[in-house]
Image (cartoon, rainbow, N blue to C red):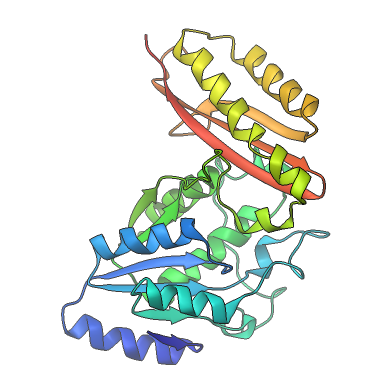
Length: 284
C-alpha cells in the first residue's frame, strides 16, 4: 500500500487505474482508525477493484473550543492497519493541499435543510466543513463509490444530498455502525473516556434501544419519548444535548405517514461528547 500526500501524485496514480478499467472505492476518514473504519474498507473491497482511503483531520468542521488540536493523530498505526486490511492507497494530505488559499479564503459547500438542526444547531458550521471537504475529496479522488458509517447518520444524509445536488457520479454506500460487545458505538473519541466513564457509556445505546422498543410496541407520543430519553441520560450522569426522533429519510419531525424513524442522541460524559442513533420501522 502506498501513501501519497499531494493531489498531483494522487491523480497520477488513479489515472493509471482508471485506464486499466479499475472501479475505485473510497473511504474518507480522519484517522485514528478502529474496527469501524476497517469495516468500511472491507465493504469497499466488495464494491471496487481498488480501495483508496484518506486521512485528513479537517479544521473546517471543528468549531471554537472543540478538539481539533488534540484529536488523535496516529498515522503510522493507521498505515499498518490499512496495509493489513489490503487497502491499495492512502491519501494523507497536509492542510495546505486541501485549502491552498488558507481556510478563511476557501470556498464552502452548504447543504440547507439537513444541516441546521441537531448536530448543526449544536455545532454551527460543522456540516459546511464536512460537505466542503468531502466535495473536495470527491473531486480529487473521483471515486465510483464512497462508503460512510451510519453512526454519523445526519452526516450521511448531508453527504448524500450534497453528492446528488452537485451531480457527483459517486454511489454513496452506508455501512452499519460497529459496536463494542456492550453496545457502545466505536468512535475515535471513545479514547477520551476515563475508565469509569467508559463503564457508563453504553447507557447511551441502551436508552436509544429502549425508545426504539417502545415505538415497536406502538408508542407514538414522540415528544414524551424524547423527554424520557433526555431524562434517562441525565439521570445516568450524562449531559444530554439532544434526544430526537425524526423521519429516517429527511430528519423532519415524523408524521402519521412516516414509515421509518431514526432516534438520534448526543450527550456529554465528562468532557467527551458522544453521538449515536438507531432506526425503527413504525408498524401501522
